[in-house]
Image 1 (spheres, rainbow, N blue to C red):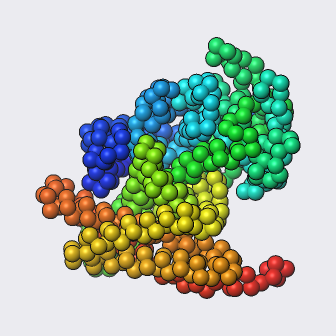
Image 2 (image 1 turned 135 degrees about the vertical axis):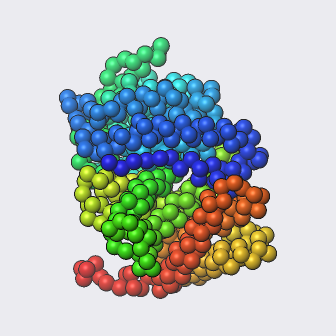
Image 3 (image 1 turned 90 degrees about the vertical axis):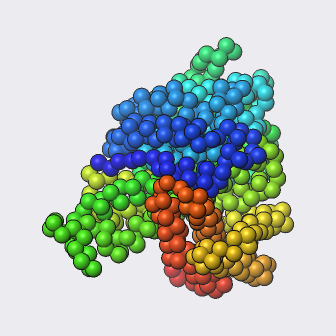
Length: 592
């Protein structure tokens, strides 16, 4: 049976040694001192390891069941969800006026990592609800906020997002679900949606669906899409639940992973709904929810990699196999633990260097989000918009790869279900697909985000890298081990951008064919920047006489590994990009 322990020490390092959050000018950050954040993270870790993690395998084994129109969640899920609700975890960064605790989003990111590592399928119920909360908060009327948000904040009611239909996925302009206006200002919603996570379940009194549909007579394509609030039960004027709405779960999908989350086919048969935001501007409101979800899915990639790594590390320390080539490390035993072998070390270092670098980048990015939200900082908003497809795409690609590496450490036992590693691999796989498959994230990055605001956010990112290198190049150790590799990788990334500018205008396929490589390349540079920053923070802590020297020296060694063994991949991706579209498009479709 796999286990999980929240990485509390590393989270504290990132929040305070690296990001120095309590010194920040972002509203609410001054209250986030070490003792305060430690108390929250430690309690989230306790709940994760003692309550959520033991149910992970239960959810995988039992799955969800559709019985007479009601989805039954796995044994223990409702009781665990009650503890999340009662502890206020679902309301951590929500507005106080709607019952939230009003903490900065960075604390939600820090605690949610533990919840996702412990039980990804269960955490999705509250994760989607948070997205629905944000969509209504930013686009709803005051009356809608008052009616829906308090129950969503507390997770007495949960939320969903309904986009995909059987005949259309990414191309939402093809959708057929319609919304017919009624005299009382409501709409009748008719159509079918598929792949709806948490679309029906038995853990909340009501489910609030946010549904994309077209109002008859509106513009064609995506410009004619509107967003509607469509609850499972219609609320009465006093807030109590009234009649069942004409929305139902027609089927549960049988999936590769996340069995504990109900992935539903939802049927809308003239269901009552209310317009959220402006008519025919539904994608504007939905993107508020989708961007939150994409950052959350990126966190899923990191979180699954973390828990898989923890278990692979424990196995490598315990499993006896072979002898250390330099001499027995366990002379009293029949063999040495496999962690002595260089290739096992390589695998573990790839895992460790990714999860620690991604954790830092995820929290650093959430600071941008908090700055943009609370201070209306346009530069921060532009930068987090640029980085969102990188976080979603790169984190989930690497999260799946890292989970597979962790499984490999077990050898044949990794393929046996009782050890639990296959669940991490299977659960991690969906994160590369939903909320916009990673190929779409790459196209969004290269086709839209790089050129946004005349390229200002992209240039701001390069300036961040350049400034950090310049400010620290006087440190010879930092320069050789971290700054020089970061500078080389950043130059590769800039060269790829220049290629897109020169060749993409001649033939757009030259840019699009290299988009996936560019997204991966940028992800490596982002983590390279984090590792250089963490090295600076670790060196400063050692110079100040930190008591836990081993932690900081391990941080420096892990960073050197990333710079030496992972970051040079940018050169390969640049070579692929500059080969252009011809190798990719050479075959006619019929010749594949």
